[in-house]
Length: 134
Image 1 (cartoon, rainbow, N blue to C red):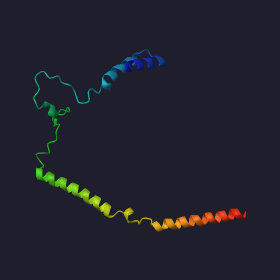
Image 2: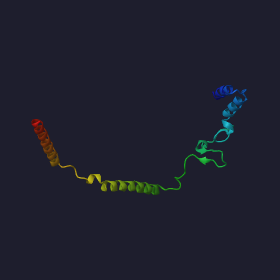
Image 3: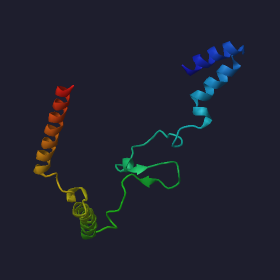
Image 4: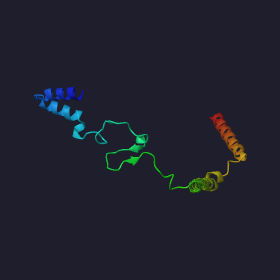
């Protein structure tokens, strides 16, 4: 597809197709960079059982796919870190509930609605008396 597009662009620009062939070949070869993780080696003998657990990124020292922190962190140390982290966030949540300013604002009392209704009635009576006088 890329070769066809560059061929069409070469014809439009008046070239003889050399540019399109070179662009197509370089696109085919990933611009000369090769594969992202080095050369792909086809195995000629059976692979070991743990081969899929190693990530060969082309360096002399392949890395394990699974992080090996289980050997360095004990069971109770991990439990202590987990409990400490969870208790920190629980404490932060309780502090936010305790310091909630919106809950300290009092609600509007029911008597204010009676006052508002009384004022609205007075305004309506005043307007109706003004209409009668006109």
